[in-house]
Amino acid sequence: MQRRTFLQGLAAAGALGSMPFGALQAMTQTGSVSVETLPKLEGDLTLYLGRGEGGLYENVLKAIEKRNPKLNLKVRRGGSAALANTIVAETKAGVKRADLFWAVDTGSIGVVTDAGAAKPLPADLTAQLKDGFQYSSWSPVTGRVRTLPYNTKRVSEQQIPDSVMALADSDLKIGWAPAYSSFQSFVTAMRILEGEAATKSWLKGINRNSKKYAGELGVVMGVERGEVDIGFANHYYTLRLKSGKPDANVALAYTNNDAGCLVNASGIVALSEGSLPANFIRYLLSTEVQAYLAREAYEIPLVQGVDQPQGLVSLSDLSPPDMDLRKLADLRPTLNMMRDVGVL
Amino acid sequence: MTTTLKRMSALVFASAMSLAVVSLAMVSSRAMANGEIGDHVNNLHAHISEYTEEVHWLESKFGSVVDAYAAKDKSLKTDALIEYWEEVEFHSAIETQFVPIYASIWQGIYGVKMAIDGGKSLSEVRKEQENLNHALWQALGAVKLAAQYQKKGLVDVVKTTEKEPTTGPEVIDDIKTRLDRVVAKYAEQLHEVATTLVHDTYLQRFEGVEGDLIAKDAALVEDLEKDFNVTLPQAISKNKGVDSVRAVVETMQTKLDRARALLVEAEKSRKDVF
Image (tube, rainbow over all chains, first blue to last red; front, side):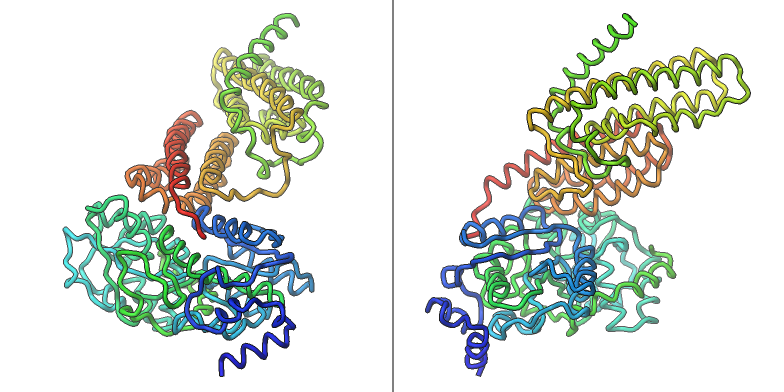
């Protein structure tokens, strides 16, 4: 059924005749595929790229361009949120400048999809993604999980509650970075999952026994130094610290089925119809790009069949909450609440 | 006049010597200039004589303010020092080409202004005036050197939109330039702007490269984290003075040089995507 739907889609796009057999075969499978089997990219594409991960995304783009000499890729760079707003403004004005938007956070993706600027993606493309990460109007690229880095000299794993809400009532000294965007997305998830009152009460509880840091790497390093027992941070900071300092006094704990183990994602949106933007996205979901980002940036591959970065529990062993990540775009009530409580 | 020319030559020479070492920093600051971006910053060579006139004019105007103070002129308003500086096109020429000296000019202006407003002795005010004049001539030397680079096509065109760095080493270069601007904004007495710039530089730039760095040198990242989030913001909020803020920034820039080398090394050892 899926194959038939996909072939109908291709015929409608008039693209069937131009596809090499390998590409056709690859595109009717689920799971990751090698770039070797993907169609060549030809023509003009404009990508709005949200900044993040130093030069790694740039390396991916350069590799795609090198492999596809007939692709004329123009890139506009900026903060994800600013670019999302630009796309919305351009859409309202009826001026389309971007064909694709690759953002580091789903909140920005949500702004664009809510504005009706996103074009539907082929079903076979979204089918490559792991369960829970398949969306018709955008594609996650890689993920990051919320974790609880803890100091292994000060706390045992058994002392750590498996509910993020319970942490507000614990005696543990906690490190956090309320001004940091990933933390605010996490609180937004909590607000959506647990409600306003519970989240407000949680913020007050944590605030009583916490130390603030500017960013989440600072949180992880504060945990490692023993300034705090435990912290809130995306997983990759701890993995990177451990890779440079294997004997660092920090390990990762995870909560269970709540915002504390939310898996957020970077993602991409096609803003133009046609096979070229969708095929560009296929390159980002290829085995090679997914493995590269996992290896170099410690990001979590969200395509089926690609290994996770070392040191992280398997995604299948985590129990992230079931929620549409685009809802994380609803940040304003979160910020208002954090200001009300006095943590911002 | 002869003395002035001699002094100018000496300062220009000194500037040229020091700038040769840091010429890369000139391919830089861009975008965030207060002044208008136009021919006067993108065709410096054609404007050098105007800039020289402006520096003479500024020296004379600043001198007249100090002379009025010496004459105990009741109508003296030290805000005029800022107004004179904001009036000249030379302002954006140096701001877009070499931010550290731009910061020194602001430091000099406020040095004179605060000495007068604080009722300091004439000799102390004259000393501040001398520092200010020195900064002006040094700036002219920097702009002349930049004009030569520009003529040879060695520096980018100054644009009103900021160019995003795309590689780790480029990000570090951008951070260093932004930190120079922090000193300039602090010297301009815009402390909140300076603090916001530190915060934005951390979130929008340093955070993008620290992941790669921490695997290479965790202690260095920890050090820079503290600099960005504690040492530099505190130097600004406690109003420790331009020299102290500049010292913090220069220490950070040395650490960032080390970070840059690590990122270059990391990029070399990285496997290809495909």
